[in-house]
Image (cartoon, rainbow, N blue to C red; front, side, top):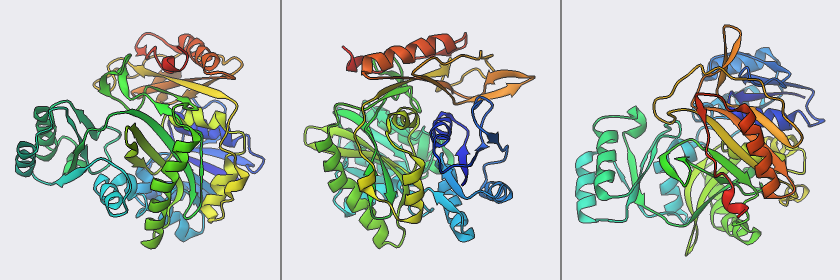
Length: 421
């Protein structure tokens, strides 16, 4: 089977690494990939528009497409491939609204009793002012842009004044363009976060090992929100009982709702949850693998990941074949550019690093410049350590990260620290 993975970041590098191990895969390409994916069989440079992606897929006679980033799904790539009879792991455009529209996701959850923070939707700043004045929340609230904003559309505000300022920037100043023409303002939940991922075939599902992501830029969860500075798996604070609760209260009603709408969800459903005193509540949905959660979940899987993805695309998932348990631990440390997630330096010279046993270096934002390997994005490299315990995995991750870090890059030093103290 000829397989293509759409995307160019660390998540896609991890997917390529895992899929190459499958006996079902005879040829594997990255579209468009990046120069740091040294172990990929082939790369196809292309624009990420749906038309260009489809042309590349057809030209390379691809049998199965796995979509990494959210934008092609929101743009209807899966719909177009389905029309052409090409199997795709990723939901159709209407189902991908779970991520591409925060308003759609929140309203669906409200309609079907899915536990989530109380919220209101706004399209003009005056209504926001009136609402916040009438309903003060001195402990803070969350403001979210409705549309896709490359991970920059959610703002955790510590005061009403801050929430008002964010709403003004989105609705009046158009800071995020059309993504912020509608906003969601919701209550601020407290508790511990976790990332749950589910293979879904429209009706059936399989849970992957739980992970925890670190969003803040600096140690101690300080600084601005980022696309993710590190993660670990499995997350011990999410026992099987909690996963089953999320399945019953979240996954099943959402899959049933989308199927009833005539838009069955086939692909990877990401459920970001907050473990509150009253139980798990949904923070967000994503319509694809998390980044950098993928980099730690896939090494922990004890089975061929390509097989269930293919079954999901066909609508024939067999959950009993795929055990949720794992005997391995994984920790990912993200090496990012100085200044990220604000203004940061590009084209930092990188050095090739030899990975040792139980170490994996995934390339996220890299490029070739005048024959040299350099950084090209905010999150540059993902250093992943594996081990039979979280402490061993963490040590392996930081040993690799220390060999890969160069001047112009930085990392958090407390990823998974809470799990080994």
